[in-house]
Image (tube, rainbow, N blue to C red; front, side, top):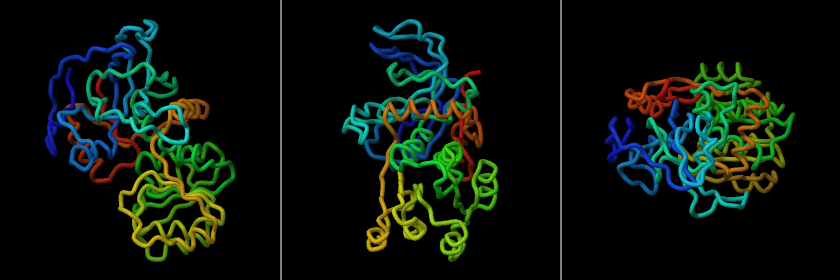
Length: 332
């Protein structure tokens, strides 16, 4: 089979690999489309824990089951599915177990014509989604759903601020918040991304590159009951200022590093809840897929590439120029 293979740091090729054989409890999925995440770029650049090479990256994928391993019901064959990339979460809904992993490292991932995964990681592809949309959903959709609903307990009519709109997870958070009846607002460094966010239901947007943006935006549109962030860094202090008393700030990344001067006094005085979130449980994944189906949500696909052009997909992700998910189409 043809696959993207990372042979080492900054060593990315398209290679031909043996077809995987499903072990007991596993299935072989013919991938129709896969999607790129920042995680894949960080692995390629040697900026991720637990690196091993060679590895087929890719956490997001959708396709058709073409073979089942021992102990798996043969009725799975020919089913269109999406793959839950959150492996071995465990039984505690509050937190993942130490053995938790994500598809694409240490297990070979979805940027290949075929992937083998446990049958327990599959969900039926929502019928309203095409292959590219289905491939865009798993990792970012799961992360956004858990952050908004399992962790922050977002309710209808609450004001929600989503930072850094354009990235796949932030776009899902916007779509999910709007579908749930919340009042979503967004931030970005790009006026064009703010405009596109309004088309998806954002009530207002702010350029966080503008001096004094948080005070002005807060006066007109805040304060916010829920704030969703993946950047951290120095800008986190603005989010604390924008949070309503008793509000919740949920975050699942720190792309700008740790918060340099943590405003602890403001946090306790405003009775704020700071909520860390990572990926999600099997229950979160099933609930997310059901939510997408119920509300007929279409994931935003910002760009598509062929498998042979996967290097260009990685380059676009690294540049941050996309709005929505970057998808690699593999099978017709």
